[in-house]
Length: 493
Image 1 (cartoon, rainbow, N blue to C red):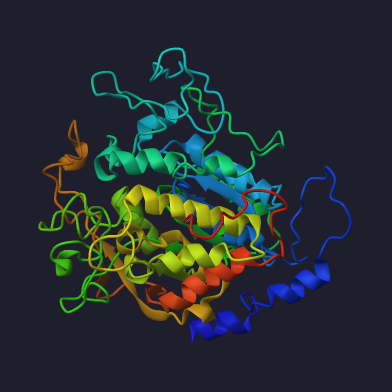
Image 2 (image 1 turned 30 degrees about the vertical axis):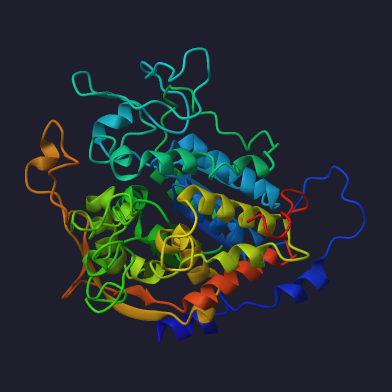
């Protein structure tokens, strides 16, 4: 019923991009004018909270940037396995490339109370935190990790909610390195030229203190239309927004769409279904931390845990509870929907077919680079490694926003419970031991009851339709980029 109401409200009725293109197509020479995407007069604003640190974030951003029904009002970059500056620059470059020139970009909230002394989004009044350069006489593009327990000095670009750098533990080094360059393809995206499309924080020093949640709440106050809140990273910032917002501010949120979590005993994580892990496939129970074959899956270590929820399980639980209690319409996209949404070899070829847009050509090369990084075909399955372990994670969440009717979503309403740290561990000197910690921390399950509105869990989708929608939207010439990567000749994928 909720989904039917969503459609009837007209917020998500997708017209033909081809028709729109014929109505709004530019004519004549573009010259040096800054490319400006065509947006509907009543385009709905989006507040997007994510880490923007991998290929799925980048492609999801392209899909939403092209859609005339939505405008990205605010992008909030959470820390993750690469720096906030890297994520911010990815946002700047893609948005300006696709003619989205007015988005404000900030870094996400800090979790620990002592971190407010160091600040965010500007230049702090106290002593700066300065890290030595990783390589002498060369600028740091990715700040080195600091973990001085004695002085409490941290590199704030890499510290997470639990107190140490989990990202290095749970993301293999080659993945981290390749994520920071979009698998060696980020140079194919033109660099943003606008002065305000520059992130100034990656200096090894702290900024003027301004809470991310305050900036978000101020944005809510200033918006005439009710925005969509779109969350594709950890839930630290969103939890703080919901905790501080007034009733009037909460009422301004139209709906929330999140990517995160995974649920055991639902497809594909059932005993009779081949899930996404090498080895004993039935033992990957909804998580994605150790689903890369380099870890092996003969152990059930960490297979319950999804990355976004694991990085701040306390904020995740607080967020789910607050959304329900405040009757905010919410859609959660877990690994149950994304784990079988795999990229296939034909996806790369289809993106690069004749008359492809620059963003389609770029995405084809991006996916091809991931294929090369993953080592080609796995034995026995006929598709390359990417099809076995790389998912369309945030891309599926974007399509839930853009065209849910195409996805044929299987919605399961309920209340969400998140396993927390053992008592006392959170207050210890090293609050999160990556070797001995409880492997169910961050596990998501359905609670039997709750207060307020149920969360709509997107437990299944039509994966073929999702792939097709992604390809067609990237290839559509409406709001396409005017320059950029060209498609490689056939046979070089």
